[in-house]
Image (tube, rainbow, N blue to C red):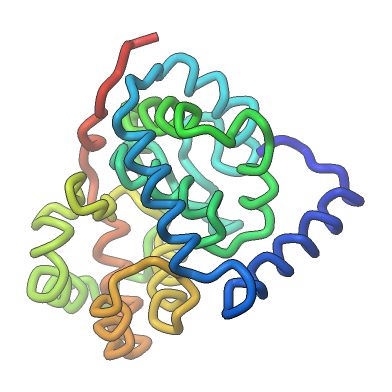
Length: 237
């Protein structure tokens, strides 16, 4: 992501914390934020996307953290985005913009003029979805890959598909081509309710996982490779 003035970061961090604290009776309620994210998502997905413009915006605003090609950063636990589903990428940008996902740094980024509109999200998502995923990602120890495979195919494949490619229609993300520790972190965050606007059944399901289950599924998924998802409506420029 682009460099951020430290003074502004502190100021925006405080504002973001205040905004999240106000998502309760008397302030901005979660339902209001969710409705806003829903409307923005539908608006973005109805637009004709311009991947070339999205590439330029991504390079200027996002590549500092997510890598020049959307490969992420395993050491800093930053997700790989290349090849991710268009609808999921748009949905997450809308969620960050509406305060439905918690990340001070991402709130700073999506507050910039270049990333406030659904057209911006559609363009960046189209670029990333068409980008080639990296040939390798961070993986776990390999000790419980068989366990992870069993859990995934028994419990998760009905939504994420047997090859973990995800599902555009249900805003279900691709889970392949992803870094191990990022997968572990997000499963843990989902289980404790730190991710808003997600299916309550998924939260309850992940709460049933013990530490070994989480590590096993993440390790199995981190070893899966495959092309990106459907690119959506693109103008090619």
